[in-house]
Image 1 (spheres, rainbow, N blue to C red):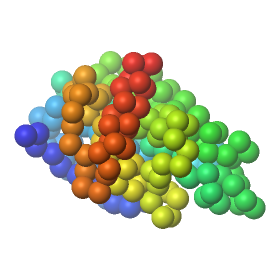
Image 2 (cartoon, helix red, strand yellow):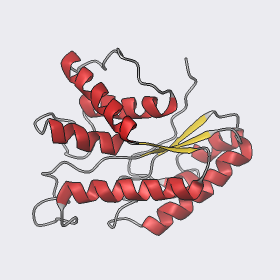
Image 3 (tube, rainbow, N blue to C red):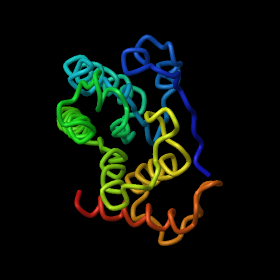
Image 4 (cartoon, rainbow, N blue to C red):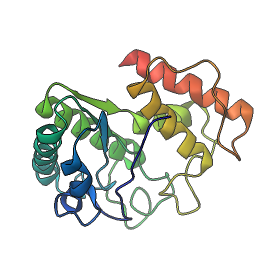
Length: 200
């Protein structure tokens, strides 16, 4: 079993990892990590956030990680757009002119750009791309929680699959779903992740 540690707090991002508000820098300085997963606040790599700061902070985190874990894989956890009915992607408070599609395009493009700048030993876990593809194929499948923002059990399973498929490819043909995830939906979500990974 992999040994893991979670360093996260709700609403926080790369800048908070750097100040050690989440305990991330303490863990990074201990060293000896094989994989370090980095997730920015969901709005940070979009026009609603600060893309330049996202890229700068990502570089600083990369340098800190490789200083103590030079063989580590830096895994960028690409998050997903808000649900189509969320105020930021629809209605009077709409921030993204083309809705959830635009938000996901910005997230994907900026995580890819950070990976490009970080160079070798970096990969993107395309959870957001997998969400978009799953909802394209099955618009009625619910991945978001009731707040239209965070993941429900289906969304959590899909995101975990994207990370697993990036760190330990290929994704197994049979993988038990999380409690509360229908077995047929789980099989569908595994197929979605395989398809996204094949497209690269």
